[in-house]
Image (cartoon, rainbow, N blue to C red; front, side, top):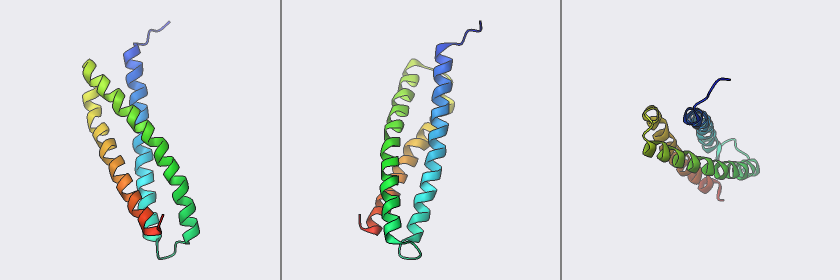
Length: 114
């Protein structure tokens, strides 16, 4: 049988989660920006409030995923994995991007009064 190095596998899973998370982040950020544009224009308030509720849950769920990714990333760095250096940029992008998303979402919440 072929032997898969456990740390290589962990790293691959980590990279996949990170990429998935960044894709989610970009999509969500764009969606929040789009909704912000709709407020007071063509956006029906009850629809915006409904969307807000769903998105709030989605962000909260993914906040847990982000925390796990950051913890694992710290562990990989401590263990001195060379490959993690290539991923550091993506990890930083995730950290900053998530903060920006939360700020934008808070602004959106305020604009619809929830």
